[in-house]
Length: 310
Image (spheres, rainbow, N blue to C red):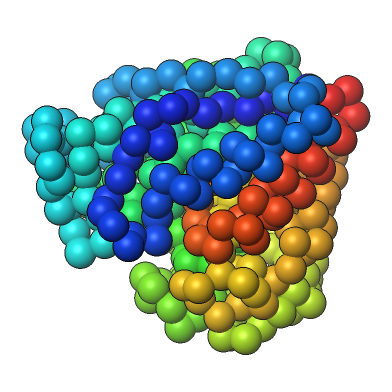
């Protein structure tokens, strides 16, 4: 069974009119996942991440500053791209809490895998600062939670968002038991993610040029990232599932199609089947064309639901 974590407060987080990371993204996903074929999802409310969980990745001063600055009314600007309204702190805590709860549920055998339909996204958030629509790095928190709460040693994050997950890379940089593998457009925000950035040999970046289509993505995965992941032999796989490399997305210039997300989900599930009893948790990152996002997420979740025993 595939578990779906979500929470209504993630719809109330709003960074202002015209902002691409908007509540309608989740509404489009919810509509797509309301179709009868998704009736078998085990739908659960995302819990609030505790400060102790957030502190697995973020410094205490940063955590305290976010709690302190969270507004009761209006908006507060954290950086040029990221703002908070009265719902934002709760949404960010639910997003991180979703990934931690998903890890718990999969480890406890409640489901084969899970998808977290939450926002704000997380992979740009560094240990001590917000960046690029992100407040807390939910996927990195989930990875560290898998180790702290369940005694796992080798945890992998695969990130196929069009933007490089600089925050996750920084959090994992010098820990050889944490794997970070990314395909992303370069040049593009945030400017990191060169192949030469390898950390302790655990960082694997595969930048793609503007205009690259699905075949270039599949080649980078099949020839580089997936063999590296296979050699790592993960105990758990988490996915930073950004869908903004889609050809229809307005924020970048890669040319993926929905079928490419089907393919990589199948490949990652097969890898999880070989190494970690199928344990996969995926969490939403980017994706800003509503129709493309809804179709790609539906395709991704559809494949998760095909897991043996799922």
